[in-house]
Image (cartoon, rainbow over all chains, first blue to last red; front, side, top):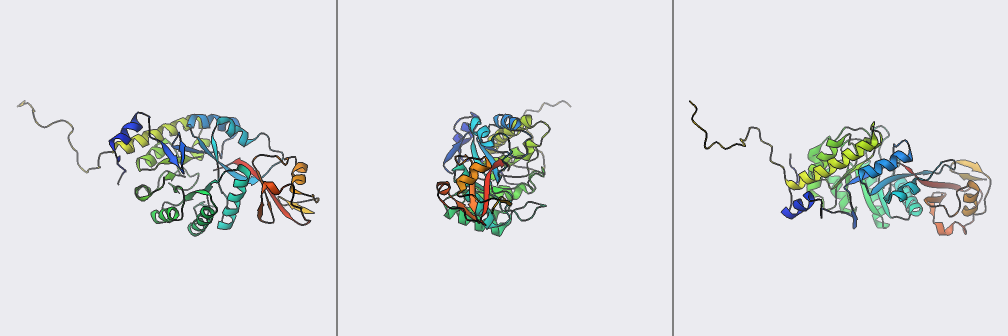
Length: 275
Length: 65
């Protein structure tokens, strides 16, 4: 397996010091490489505590028919936390529906950022590649900052980048499955070739999955269920944030190659004759 | 009759009037409206007439993703 190695010493050093290792996404500098999905939290209060524990500065929301009986405002909660809102197009099965949902989200939230999801079926929630690419192209042309949720296919990732997406967000495994990164080779390949940030966007089950994503070269991790549906979401938010940081440092530090046989770490020279 | 989020409702003169009736308010943050499958910009809420039979979708942000 190939892992990204640090491009320069100063990059790794800066990250280790917690200094200038900025995460820039579509021209916006984000203080955290962990993005948070707001779905699945059982209360706004729990969501707020998890956002704080995660350090995330960008939090996803979905667009649905309003419920006049709904109590409290999600947007007020997120605004109070000082985080930016990233609308998604979850639940859309066609490019047309996804484009329309993105346009409605732009109108509602006055932001041209969108997490683009076009899914193929309800059992796997896997992306529908042709529809996704069509929607991405249309939204880019319409002035959106498009962050597409995609499969772990390096060719599709490249095509999405080619049509102007600001990042690619491959899945590790299906949404909410907690199965981790099923094909780390593909994630590493995507990271190696991408000219835009790669954000691992689904499948994280626990902290080590997030660390692996970063070690493979991802620029960030987007996490929802792993945190919101954990027994203790606030503790898991902190754990995954630490894992993202650790994985980033490890990626920049440059890991040793894997070898089949041992390589002694103590010198052979200078051994005494104890015969 | 108009169709608001899938339900039959009495006519309303404009989207702004409809939103007031729904208790959302025409100044509501985080709300977007589509008429017959087309986004209606906020700037048109007071102005565009709401013809009988129109399918109105009123969306807002909820937890997700």
